[in-house]
Length: 325
Image (cartoon, rainbow, N blue to C red; front, side, top):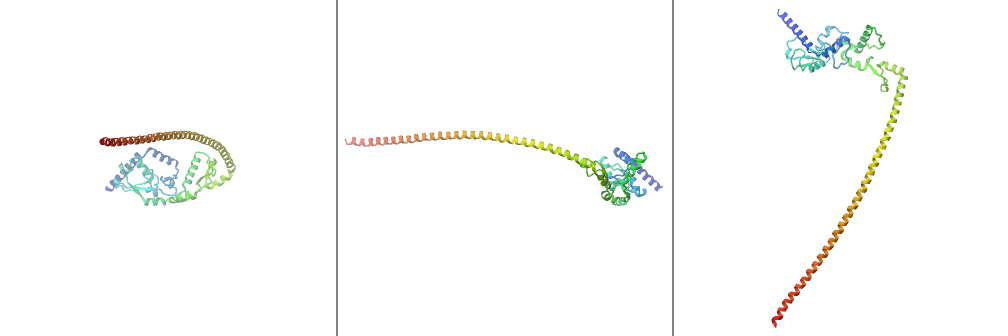
């Protein structure tokens, strides 16, 4: 009975957790998940988004990924983290989520834990889960998407394009980045003449065929671009000539204005020099007058002294003579 009660309590807590997660999930996120489940297209952002469960299950059993599923988006966790808040230590299961999913969920829900409604959710990287997910065997995700698109086109009765390129990659998730960047035959490349207007995109190994078959079209694109460049060069030449003319005109006006200013300055300097010369002459004349006055004053002073001496001499000698008499 005790075990049964524990089981019932665990199952009820799991049900509550699922209800809470469903209530917390943003509507936009739910719509995105529904669209992905309907189209069954594998994600290509292996650095952030979680891995499409349908793609992983192509070469793996459900039991292998049950404990590796993101509790937020329900896909296989990418960069798995373990939620280890103290508020739900009583739960026996490991709470795994994709790192990108948990970060987005906490940002949208004000850092509220996706397991139970509490703040300050804590999590840490789970290296064991990371190794297990990295060791899962998968097919090329681009081949998976191509096959799904062909199946969807056939189901709708549409004629799909001939898909002669098949990527037979079968390896581990941890080796996907190297495969997609270096050896995947479904890796698409843009035409070398993209900058001339060719918008063709094809798998890398088909690019050479496109360059050969589209040689005439590419030649016309290059010639059109060349004609456009010639027209542009002619327009730039006219603009350059106008620019030089305006520049020379400005230089001429500036030089003319400078010459005018120089003449005015020279005339002003001559007037100032003339005025200074007149002032100097005036000062010299005043100085000469003052000098003459000084000489005259000195002469008058000498004459006065002579008169005083004569008077004194006469006065003294005249008294002596009178006394004798």
